[in-house]
Length: 126
Image 1 (cartoon, helix red, strand yellow):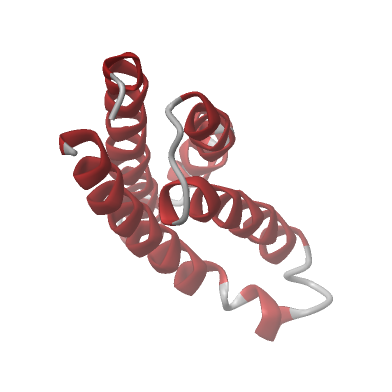
Image 2 (image 1 turned 30 degrees about the vertical axis):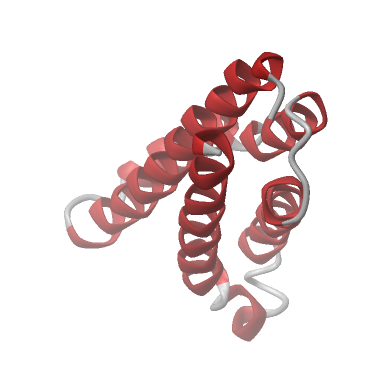
């Protein structure tokens, strides 16, 4: 691997790890809203705006880091799932069974981010 790709690949690893931790935090905030105080739904709604574009940043970095396969394309799929999360949240009155997929999609996002992190780390380590 050319040495110039290493810093970009490390940035991919760090951003992917940050995204995975952020998804776990987002799930925890949702749990606080359900089990502690419904006022935490506001935190849940606001926090997503901080993390929603991270997969796009990872996708863009994958070109500069010459990453392929999982490290390049799963972030795009994760962004698609974030858009699906918005749909499940906003269509709850019209399609409640569709909206019930919201927590499942969150778990899938967490799994995908950890899977991407594993592959990004292997790519960085060479």
